[in-house]
Length: 329
Image 1 (cartoon, helix red, strand yellow):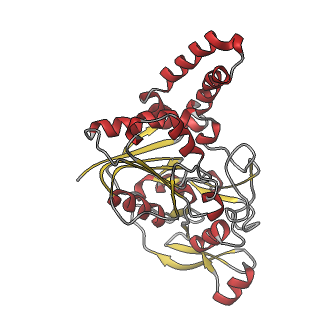
Image 2 (cartoon, rainbow, N blue to C red):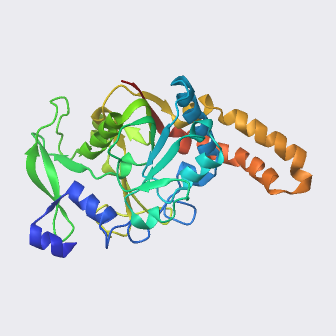
Image 3 (cartoon, rainbow, N blue to C red):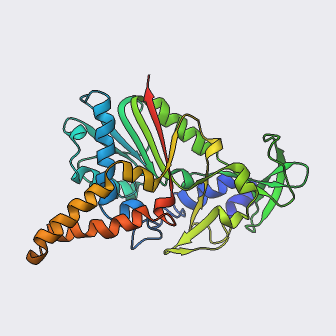
């Protein structure tokens, strides 16, 4: 990384994040970083299959509202090793009996782990779809620029070959964002562009995003450590400019920087409205009837109870934000 900066000059922060996370040789996700209990962080799909089962309910609801079309497509982006895909497919949504599941993942190593039932791609397909686009904790991982207030202007933060921050050119931002001395904000153009691309590819259907969200003005009023974090081995890491390629870099998603028209709820509210509590009740009934048999079905049913607690926890995953765009061209 230092050699690149010596050759090319200081990197903008989005260039830094891109290299740290996605460089083919040295990037975090190219060199073994991953989600899951044995990885570096735990996301909702890794809690267990219940999250995917609830999403299958939502997918079928969208499909039904569209008149149950054939060739319905579920397009999951940032699919990782296919954990969510497996859970959704195991739930056997009716929409996929004659439909397709496309899993988009830029890491070749992760794509190799996808279930055989899915179509694996590295980027959005060119053709438009009737169906849904799903992204779980993707936007927070997309590269972003970083700006610092100097009391008069917002200035771009650059990273030197010593992996230190310096300020560069001024950045024009809305006048309502006062560039207080020391205030920092992310500029999330790639997240905004991703949402627009997702909206453009769907002819009829929906786009669904799960992530931890905030607003630009809120982040400007908080210490950087409140909204820009690093992780390694389930522990919070160090500065985002330290240990390049050896830790995940993640940022709160600024809702005001995304295309509008979305319905926003907490993850707990969304999962509740799409049947998680009914699935838990069903699991409890199965467990009570079959516990004495000690079978796998009974154990899976019982696990729904503990999975739901994690997924609905308002101080954890349940406090994440769900954004839903409904599309009918």
